[in-house]
Amino acid sequence: MADGAAHTSCGLPYELSNFQGFYQCPNSTLVARPSSIQELKEVVAEFEHVKAVGVGHSWNREQFCAQTSPDSSVGLVTTEILPVLSFIENPMDSSEFLPEGPPESFPIQVDEENATVTVAAGVPQRMLLDYLSNYTQYGEPRGWVLPAFSWFIDQTIGGAVATATHGSSMTWGSLSSQLTQLKLVIANGTELTLTPESHPHLWKAAAVSIGRLGVITEVTLRIVPQKAVVKEVDTIDIGNFTAAMLEVEAAYNAAVAANDEEAIREALFAIDETQLFWFLPADSLWRVDYSYEDKEPENVIPNIDPTVNLVAPAVRAEDGPDGAVVFDQAPLEPLGPNLAMATGTDNWNRFYTIALRGYVIPGTYSARQAYLSQTEFTTASATFAPYDQYEVAIPISRAGSCLREVSETIYGPDALWEGFRTPALIRFISAEEFYLAPTNGEPHMYINLEDYISKSSGQNNSEFQTVISLFREKCGARLHWGKAGWPEHAACFDGAKEYPQSWCDYGCAVRELDPTGKFDPISSVWQWNATRDGKAVEDFGACCTPEGFSDACTCAHRTDCAGIA
Ligand SMILES: Cc1cc2nc3c(=O)[nH]c(=O)nc-3n(C[C@H](O)[C@H](O)[C@H](O)COP(=O)(O)OP(=O)(O)OC[C@H]3O[C@@H](n4cnc5c(N)ncnc54)[C@H](O)[C@@H]3O)c2cc1C
Ligand SMILES: *[C@@H]1O[C@H](CO)[C@@H](O)[C@H](O)[C@H]1NC(C)=O
Ligand SMILES: *[C@@H]1O[C@H](CO)[C@@H](O)[C@H](O)[C@H]1NC(C)=O
Ligand SMILES: *[C@@H]1O[C@H](CO)[C@@H](O)[C@H](O)[C@H]1NC(C)=O
Ligand SMILES: *[C@@H]1O[C@H](CO)[C@@H](O)[C@H](O)[C@H]1NC(C)=O
Ligand SMILES: *[C@@H]1O[C@H](CO)[C@@H](O)[C@H](O)[C@H]1NC(C)=O
Ligand SMILES: *[C@@H]1O[C@H](CO)[C@@H](O)[C@H](O)[C@H]1NC(C)=O
Ligand SMILES: *[C@@H]1O[C@H](CO)[C@@H](O)[C@H](O)[C@H]1NC(C)=O
Image 1 (tube, protein in one colour):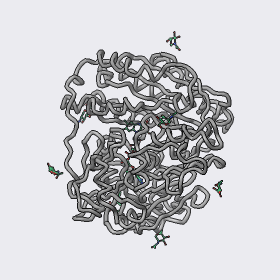
Image 2 (cartoon, rainbow, N blue to C red):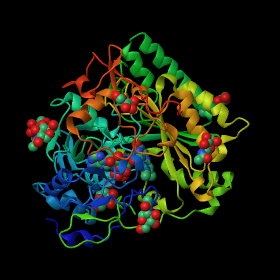
Image 3 (cartoon, protein in one colour):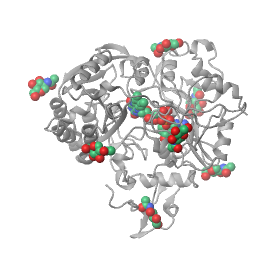
Image 4 (cartoon, rainbow, N blue to C red):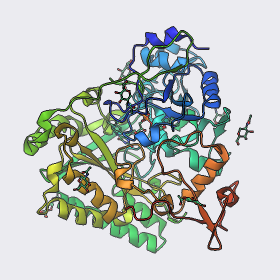
């Protein structure tokens, strides 16, 4: 059993809530802090409702809070497995392990020959990136890097892949696409090892699972040697950017219609790795593009067949007796308002223009430095003002038309730009085969939008909310699973409508791995029904095969909330 002292000595705060203290889980939900994989399996087997949590940076309480039941509902923390916790508390450099490399128990294992890294799920992405870039003493003097990583890197790597966390890449996709293997503790307490080859169907479910299949304990990701990357920056307005995206949209649609794989790659290459900060009040965008020696359109994923406190944990726990694994939650005050946020659109625009300028200085950098990711300083400023972060994913086949229509309204008489303080962040991700990837089916343009006003003003930021609704209604945008917007903007989420090619495949994976609904959270989205020959199928499982949802059945729309938008 765990050494309780080891748990309390770390002095990190514990509460099942997001990082600013909002969206707490129901009080009856306990906090499990296993210190070994064996303990983790025991907790999973023992409790009726279980939810893995990383560091709670997902603004989506409905997905990270387990269903309640007296004494049998837990949020399970992945950052306290002892080798992970000791690495978080005392970061180590690979030079300390010369000449053989780290011991087997070390939570990051680099395989230079195969160009992969195997990481315990609770390791923060930032610590992984820094460890890789300093891994210069063995076979690769340049060190290593994840080929495409996210802006925010202080989440756990397990939490990141669970929600398809992404940067901007038409070649490497989200972090989930960079996985080659993962380990998952399922409802009966056993650990499955999945690869795309060993379990083609379950892989497509598990690589973006939102915690619904079990607890990811370990991931193996591709890595590439560090290299020199040239960063270029252009200042444009939304008209220019819309025009550019209309061109991409037209070229992409024509290439898909012609079934011309090379032309699809060319169309998408125009936005490969592109990222933009969109300062809405000023109608000004910084467009950031990257180049390097072997950057070629042929590497882009074409999607030829569209049918197919820096490491503050999520949870705050009361002290328990020595040896305890499961604790009560401890209360945590949400972050107070920043009253200045309520007014001063122009001043805030200037403020963030200056604050972010350092991220877009053109030049040649190592890959780790070149691609946009938050500095530790920016992450720490999470205490500056309370906010909600939303992200919408818009199909490339309508990305330009979408921007044209929505920006007309944003800059029209209603002046919706007044609802914004920080710039939006626009990125691009290739099509992904994962059942629940927002990019399932075709490449997408992601737009990250932050509401800094409502939590400080105490009032609905209706301009901001209208913009999110416009992206949902006019552009068919899907919501990021690890961000805000649920359930307000998906009040009666109909998986068969939003994920028409894959929703019931995911349902079949859940039936297979979690038949009793142990990992069902408080969200109502996880429902699957089917019809066969026009008639409702009594037992959904009858439509499931070892390869997924049967062709003989049709994935049914939700009927339990007719009349709700
Ligand atoms: C400031 C900020 C910026 C962000 N920027 C980006 C960005 O650039 N790109 C992007 O795509 N996202 C971004 N995000 C979103 C973030 O990457 C996701 O919300 C991520 O899931 C948070 O990870 P976490 O470890 O905090 O997980 P949590 O919030 O604790 O959990 C998120 C979900 O994943 C599940 N989960 C967590 N760990 C596991 C596990 N080990 N096994 C199974 N399921 C698990 C949980 O059950 C839950 O459903 C940002 C978040 C913040 C706070
Ligand atoms: C949880 O408990 C705290 C006090 O510890 C209380 O203020 C709060 O209202 C409770 N929340 C719920 C949802 O019961
Ligand atoms: C590379 O990966 C393969 C299979 O994934 C594995 O069998 C092999 O042992 C790995 N190579 C090394 C050096 O570990
Ligand atoms: C190398 O490790 C140090 C800490 O040991 C860290 O501060 C630094 O960021 C790392 N280097 C790079 C390039 O990430
Ligand atoms: C656990 O569940 C998996 C998936 O259904 C199954 O393959 C395995 O045999 C089960 N193991 C035990 C010990 O029940
Ligand atoms: C933006 O568009 C305007 C015309 O609307 C054009 O004059 C200008 O050159 C464009 N700027 C860029 C950077 O493309
Ligand atoms: C907030 O404003 C939006 C847009 O006007 C509206 O649709 C929504 O219902 C409002 N929400 C609340 C909680 O008042
Ligand atoms: C699925 O069908 C059952 C009846 O067979 C019904 O009670 C339930 O509400 C349906 N669920 C959805 C999401 O439509």
